[in-house]
Every structure is written in structure tokens, then in C-alpha cells.
Length: 411
Ligand SMILES: Cc1cc2nc3c(=O)[nH]c(=O)nc-3n(C[C@H](O)[C@H](O)[C@H](O)COP(=O)(O)OP(=O)(O)OC[C@H]3O[C@@H](n4cnc5c(N)ncnc54)[C@H](O)[C@@H]3O)c2cc1C
Image (cartoon, rainbow, N blue to C red):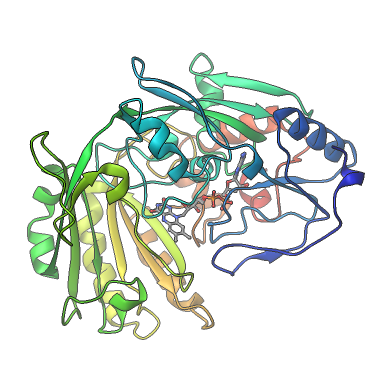
């Protein structure tokens, strides 16, 4: 496959519709060799290269006026090792593509987020997370990657090269093209779900129990009566200033499966996913776990005073620590705080106010969701940012894999 064989420029838009651009060329390679040949030729011609996963990021992390590679043709679990609790998958494997192949071998992903459409490489590139202080984000369970560099050559980065691996675990696509990932997985498990609607004060009073005594939990707080329906949370009566609380524990072996809404028990992967419509533009920040309650009280005040701009629910989760250089959970468990702006409105003033408030709590950002991170804050908040940038410069000195959004931060 050569660049000249590829179709000409066509516009690309992300899932939620807030990012659009037209790459010079777009390709859907079906092998690592094809990826290598395309990257090599593009780099020789001075073109930038970016990869798209499932296009579920809200930030311009995919944008390029050069070559855009769609890796959906490189999909599927390649191998599983129940004894070592490891699985190897191609980069374009969607999260839901892990379910059956792992379960058949008595395995499961340790954790996952609210949806399962993301490609594993896209999810890992931005440190996609679920909830639970004992559960690292997906980047935190990466034990190796195959990476095609700007020279078109593929290399394996494993635990014997910890510096490179810690950079590759959260790279936002700036080190090269991942073609395969090796993940630490866990024994297959079932989850019990407990969903209830509580007043805000009850969640805050029970915070320590919710965080420490369950496998994981999360909640949505509704600033107004219009909030819940925006995230398809319906049928729970009056919701203003109330929390839709979701508590999860591993099911005991003798506990039967149940489909009762709000009290389900089932295979873990059947419990995790929610249904979202592309009707929100999301920002998500991470504060150190212990500062969570204070930050949340301040967020509630800000949101009550910002209606109707703040109409979308506040989503709250926790995440365990990892040691990836650019991870928002770098060496600390976090309380994760998400809000959204309404598409078609000027929500930037509201999101800037959220940013300013959470900056007081030294919040780090989700790379795939709207944020206002600049270079100064990056270096202040991510102790290994300089090390990441050093690795990036070693692997891609010409900046083939940078784009206009990431160059000011990571060049
Ligand atoms: C409805 C919805 C729900 C969400 N829920 C959660 C959630 O629960 N938790 C959470 O943390 N996030 C969540 N997100 C955010 C989402 O998980 C991240 O934005 C994730 O990066 C999207 O994955 P993707 O495959 O769509 O990647 P894209 O958005 O397509 O790409 C993300 C980044 O990965 C890079 N990339 C992709 N493939 C490769 C590759 N093979 N090699 C190198 N770089 C690559 C891209 O260049 C880009 O920089 C949600 C987003 C939406 C829209």
C-alpha cells in the first residue's frame, strides 16, 4: 500500500461531532507491514501522521492535515495466557472485542469505563478509566506494546524497558503507531450492581465507606430537574440536588444472576456499559483522592450558580494509581470529576470556571476530554512530563506524530 493508491481528502468528524478536519490522505491498513510502509513514506514526504481509534475523544487528539490511519482493520485478541493473566490484542480491538475471548479462558479485563466502543489503543493512549481505588486505568495494566516508529520500523516495548513502557502507556499517539498491546487481565468475575437515589449529604457522609468498602462506585449528581434525562437516567422521580449512586461488588459464586433493574448480577462485562447519546461535550479532571469531598462540595456550589450552563450531571468516580508518565493517576489514587457543556451553546465560560476551580485542587486532566492544560501546568502537575518529552524526542525527533493540539504541550 502506497500513499498514491489512497483516496484523496475527505472530511473526518469525531463521534460527538465537535472535532472535524480533512486529512490529506486516509488509510485503513490491514497489517503491521502496511502501517510501517505508510508511516515511512509519509515521514519521508514531511507529512504528519495520526491514528484514529473509535473517534470517541472530545479533544483534537486525532487531528492532522497529513496521513490519518484507521486501525479498525487490525483487530482481535491474538492470545490469552490464564496462568500469567495476560492477553495480547491488536490495537484496533474494541473494548467489547475482549469479552468473549477472555471469558472463554476464565479471564476478564480488570476494569473498564462507561462505554465499550473505544479501541484498546485509543483507550490506552488517553488513560481511559473506570472506577475503584484498587483499579488502575487501562494504561496501568499495559505490560507491553508493539510500536511502529517514524522510520516505519516496528519494535516491541516491554517491562525490560521501563522508561519507554511508562511513556508508551499514555502517549496520546505521539510516540508512534501501536499495533499490538499486551495487557494484564484478571480472573473472570461477576458483578452485583446496587443503584439508588440519595441526597447529596448522604453520599458525602458515606464517602469513606463508598470509596473503601466496595469494589467500586460512582455517582451522578443532578443540578436541576432537566439533568438526569440528558444521560438517559430516567424513572426515579424528582432528581434535583440528588445523586444516582451505583455501587458494585464482586458476586459470590452461589449468588444467582439477576436482571432486576438496579439490582443486577451478571458477568462483569454485561454490567459495565451505559448508553450515551452524542449530546454532550465533556470535561473530566482528576484530583488527589483525599481532596475529592472538598472539591466536590465546591463543584456543587459552582454548578448550582451556573445554571442553565451547568445542566448536565456531575459524574464522580475514583481511580487507582499507576506509574505512566502522563497518567492523571500518576502515583496517586484520584477522585474523578466530570461535567459537560451543551452542544450548540457557548459553554466555554462555564468550563473555564470549572477549570479555575479545580486548578485550586491541582487537578490533572483527561487527555480525551475537554481541558485547558498548558505547558506550565503540565510540568507543575505531572512530575515526569519532562521525561515523557525526552522519550518522545528520542523516538520521533522530527515530530511526525505531533499535531497542532499536542505540539505546544509535548514537543
Ligand atoms: C460516550 C463516551 C463515554 C466515555 N466514557 C469514558 C469513561 O468511562 N472513562 C474514560 O476514561 N473515558 C471515557 N470516554 C473517553 C474515551 O474513552 C477516550 O477519549 C478514548 O481515547 C476514546 O478511544 P477511541 O478508540 O475512540 O480513541 P480516539 O478518540 O480515536 O483516539 C484517542 C487517541 O488515541 C490515539 N490512538 C488511537 N489508536 C492508536 C494507535 N493504534 N496507536 C497510537 N495512538 C493511537 C489517537 O491518535 C488519539 O490521540 C468516553 C467517551 C465517550 C464519547
